[in-house]
Length: 190
Image 1 (spheres, helix red, strand yellow):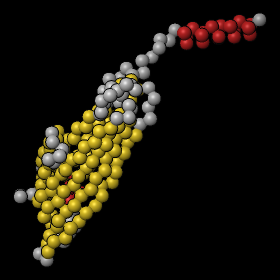
Image 2 (image 1 turned 90 degrees about the vertical axis):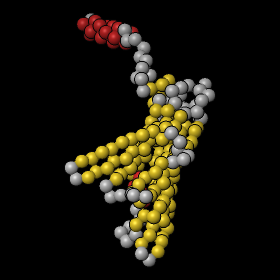
Image 3 (image 1 turned 180 degrees about the vertical axis):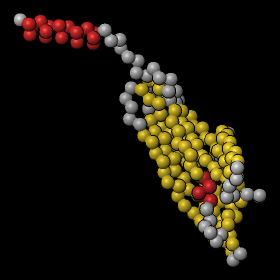
Image 4 (image 1 turned 120 degrees about the vertical axis):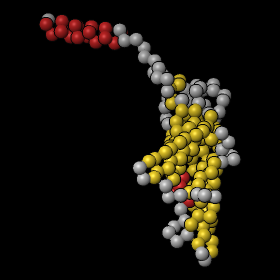
């Protein structure tokens, strides 16, 4: 009889604790959105470009939104300057499913004997999400060190060059948008 009472009390306690729980709102975080299959708008893309200068005893930096990625941005290459590219995809209706960035670069380098051309592929960055109920409203790929694509080696100096970064963002409704940012390399002082 005691065992029956203990099991009855235990069953009642479990039942009451589960029935007293209110349904949770899984998407209650402001960074999340409930995935919508009726979203008819593409995600948006925003590029930002940062620069930093370091000298003995001081450092300065800035970051700005790139208003026209097709026109691009200029990067004056010098030993004490560094640059970063940031891209963010946003979709407030169905959330970000994937963001992928790839690209390439081309430089003309010179020394006293002549010119050489360098070319390369920028390693692809890819982030995919497999959420089922809620998704992130935005996601970014950060801090690509741009000046590393303007390297001419030790016996040449940069004459000029360019890098192109392409991003493709997809939302959970299956809609995509893409954008290309061009970065134009010039030696500092030109």
